[in-house]
Image 1 (cartoon, rainbow, N blue to C red):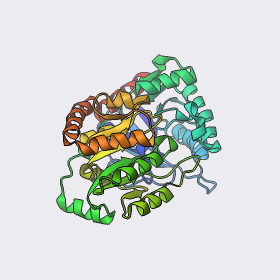
Image 2 (image 1 turned 30 degrees about the horizontal axis):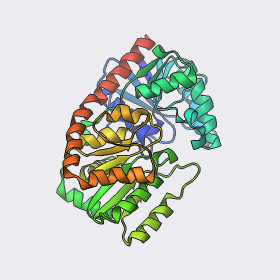
Image 3 (image 1 turned 180 degrees about the vertical axis):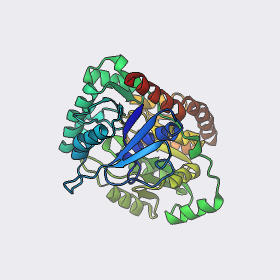
Length: 376
């Protein structure tokens, strides 16, 4: 079978969807019985994965000369699929072409834009709430990443349960085990990370409570002045919260550079930060999966997360749950983990067991099996 894949998420800085797709492709590249065509919008990234013999790549440049996700999505992709005589279309990100000429599937990682439209600007609401709904209704099958998200899709889109496939994300074993003292020293000097630090990773949305994490950490740092907080993620808050200003104020109050924020780091640097941190805090009011939970556990790190949505499903009994995403409750959980070596060790052992439930290989295999089942 010839499978067409919308691969825009591999261009530029790779976020959650890009990492999801790259891990699927890492296993699909060995499927010699099938052909994969990867479609790109602005550039074809240089990587061993993309350049695999089992993948063909196509750059669909807009002949009108301007870059447009809408034009690429609904016109160029349809043209490329038809020209290449693809037999099935897979989108790792919510949307498919309106005029898709072949059978198709999409992945809905969550539908927070339906449950909480107030978190999104007008343009995002238009694209996600209108076109994602249309894509979900017209796709031949839907993938999602948790039982929680499947329930939400059924609730808001009224789609039959047997059309929705839960394929849990995985923890990448190749991602762990850096163990390079010299590289650790270089990266800490590069980003001004001095000693013990807590890691918060993921794009910054209002629901991820980064502002409250900063306030809670500032309170914690008064008693534990050897700690830093490292935040990795671009600020996509709506309504806008000036995260950098809050960090600046907190650092001034503490009299040191206790909190650091980076928009983005390369994947190998992210792996090193996981390896170097004391523990990970990943909070949200609503989440489709929560990949940083199991990534942290793969590195043997304790995790603090929120008691809601899919985070309960993913974390199980292996994490410190924040009962409510308030400054006081976040502080209590931070202090609980920082103050007890015994508790941290317990969370590490529970995390090592929990992470075994998740596998990218299983995710990739189940996704491809369903594509082949629907496409044949």
